[in-house]
Length: 170
Image (cartoon, rainbow, N blue to C red):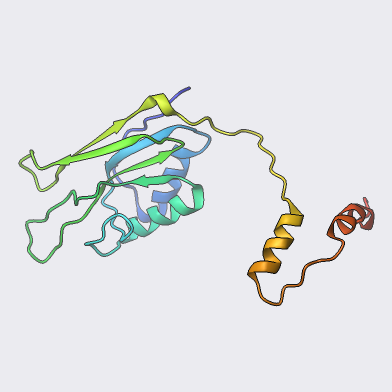
């Protein structure tokens, strides 16, 4: 299996940020991107307010199924007392697990050193051409139990069997 490690990039304009991430992660399995994205979002940085890069990155992760990996502790401590510490050094990953993050304040910088330890022995294979089928009987049973007023469809098996005959092929 191959692991893609794209180099961090100078963040492009707001309108190109998500597009650039799509280009990097598209058609790649086992991809990891690390860097200072200057992206703040309450999901990974509870002490700071979200900015546009953070909102864009969060939406990208939800839409395209990538994970955002952030340390538990803030990675940036501003010299300005008006700013709270924030987490802006992140990892964006796809189809990877077994990653540990270590932060330390050993550098003479306002950024903490962040180390991502990647265990490559546990790569999950990317599923190609996977076909999933819905179990409509279980689906109907679950709906009737979860949603009040949603009656159970009687003779569901029979109705599903005759359903294809109701469609015409043009």
